[in-house]
Image 1 (cartoon, rainbow, N blue to C red):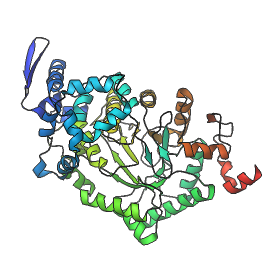
Image 2 (cartoon, rainbow, N blue to C red; image 1 turned 90 degrees about the vertical axis):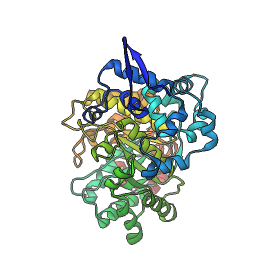
Image 3 (tube, rainbow, N blue to C red; image 1 turned 120 degrees about the vertical axis):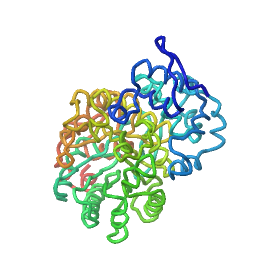
Image 4 (cartoon, rainbow, N blue to C red; image 1 turned 90 degrees about the horizontal axis):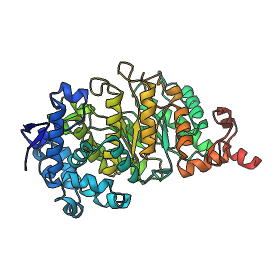
Length: 464
């Protein structure tokens, strides 16, 4: 395994495989502050040359966190499909990149090797890709999942309707749900971040939104993004209708302890939701991640943000999630400083997640103290729509009044479908047509009018 390469007349030697992988990353403020970033463009190029020549088995044999000391590494290694791994283990990272970008390689071809890939492999190949490469490779990989409707089909883009309220007022949440639905949002999930993580509040919100869904026969999912233990308690104590069970994840055991979770706890939640949750399934889990999560907990083991993010997908993969969402700019400029870094991270995350078999969405967002703005956000939204992202966020006017950050608006999602000729999930599209909000592949003039929900779905059908 060669760990030196030349660039611009200078030879660089790296201390380890991990050191080369770190230095090959595109510029990220978090990697810079952690002392992991390349010291110059020349060093970054040399690091890319080193990892390009590595065989995939080199990355398998050198995980970022040792097998003996981390349950996430053990989960990833133990779950690896040996047949798929043996097919590709002798490929170099450069060969993997070329194969992924080859027009003759189909999404089905990629899906066949996915179970044999480790997160370090996904991270390494992402670091050899340009922006356009990440779009091209991401677009050809389709990951289709089924809960109460179907997500990830070609020619479609979905959205999470995020009707957050600063004091968890149930009536206010329901009003925002109706507003978002009227613009065609919410086919991925109606997902509420609670202001207060109490079991009672969580159950009350779930029951109210599920009642609305039943009244109007809305084919989607509901989720309250409380801690996983709160959601399990809501199921057991209040028979709460949990369609999707949510939890934030990270790429190391130590970082997950910061979230108050473990592999066994997520396994328990998965089992409970499949048995006693309210969804048709079979895919009933929802996870959120983000570059910088492990670093912010000082649980990154001197590993770069991109690789740590890929390890979170390695954790998520076991549970066949309906949704995984990279909240790409939420953690702040300490980790992704500006619009360019946020865009790069968002495209990397989308590509790596899908490469590892994940139903991948992105919260294209930024906080007000980041060097980013709405134009940066809209550019990334359009790139991700081109790349075939499964879903984006959808909130009133793109400004979350509870979490105080900026993301995709109801109107943005409607416009993306117009621009690219994309459609909602098929069951949700049929429902929009039945209630008069969608016709001939686009929203009708009634879009944006929440009074459409003043008449129950059954009565509308009878009047027709």
